[in-house]
Image (tube, rainbow, N blue to C red; front, side, top):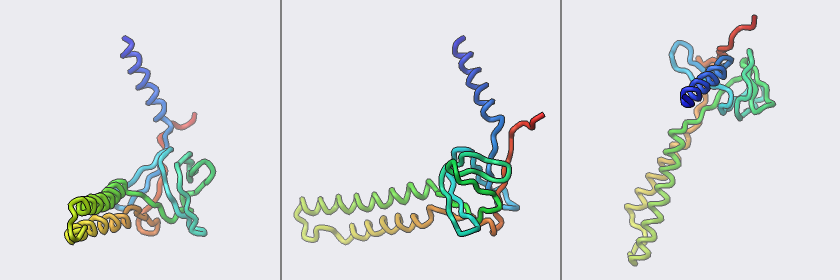
Length: 164
């Protein structure tokens, strides 16, 4: 009985929270590709005027704009670019760099312990260079820019009930 009550209360409370939700949608015109932002999501935007970049959590979504980090109010028409970070590329970039450093260090310690003539083998340098190069190359693609001039547009979707 307690379980049903708790489950019912949980469903009721989550439905109340979702009633008045607004979403900021970054979409590409003519396609189904889009990215949705809600209150609390991290966002980075560049403004048309002065090329100022604001980064932080979305604290409020209004009818014609949004508030970033509690005090930066930005209108949708003032945004020229949105920057999105790829978690997938960032993770593999860091993993590749870490693997390269670890492999180099492990082979160097092994060469010192075994009294090898070249402490680090040429094949280790090639593998380490490939891992480090791949990691640093992937780092260039972690942040992607979405320009509002290039078919990308911003919309605010309001799912709240109209006032009577």
